[in-house]
Structures are given as structure tokens and as C-alpha cells.
Image 1 (cartoon, rainbow, N blue to C red):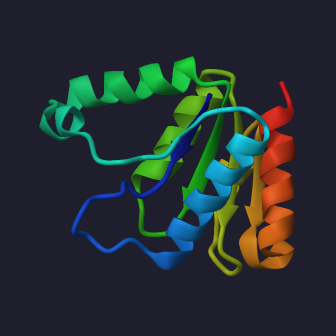
Image 2 (cartoon, helix red, strand yellow; image 1 turned 120 degrees about the vertical axis):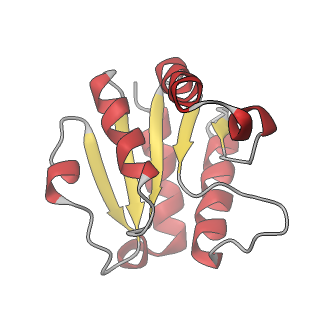
Image 3 (cartoon, helix red, strand yellow; image 1 turned 60 degrees about the vertical axis):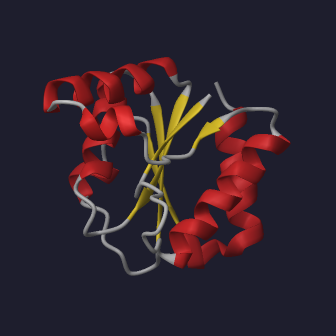
Length: 137
């Protein structure tokens, strides 16, 4: 199973179309590689959790995952933290970002982290890169 870090999908709240496209490609690649991707949908139990309970739940999910795929937006503070937690747990991390979005060097340079500029590769190549990432152990 791949843990997906990125903006949470909330009913009635608009989601950046690029993020929605990334989630769709991730789900397609997971299906093609016979894996499961945990897309971040809103969960009432997490919404009501204390900060300590929330952190414990997220860390547990990252620990249970084989790898982490992050959909990076510069104004989302949680995704980089989830990536750092994943690296601390020895997970491989793929950060997908829009061309021109600056992934902090400190994050991009961590062991096991790979970045992928969406527009540089195009939708088909992004699918291929995600599939390859998911198949690696």
C-alpha cells in the first residue's frame, strides 16, 4: 500500500484541478501495479482527533505503507512534514510537483526522496514514473 500525502479531499470544498488529476493518475498507476493507494479523503475520526491522536494515526499509516507519494503544493504545510516522517521511517518518497513550484532543497535532498515535475514529463510519463516507483521495493 502506498500512503498518499497531499491536500485532503473534502465534500463541498473545491480541490485544485491539478491535485485531482494527480490523485487520478496515482489511483490508475496503483491499479495497474495491483497495489492500493490511500488517497487522502476527509475522515471524521481524524477531524475530531487531538493533535497527538492525529499525529499518531498519520505516523501509523506511514509506517504501514510500503512507500509514500506526495502531491506537493507550496502552501500546504502538512505534506512536507508527512514526507519527513516517511523518511524517518525508512520509506521511499516520490514528490510530485508542478513545474515552477519550489520543493525545498532540504526536503528534496533527504535519503530516499525523488521529485517529479508534472509538466516536464506529461501525464503519460508521470503515470509510468509512478508505476515504476510503486513496483520498486
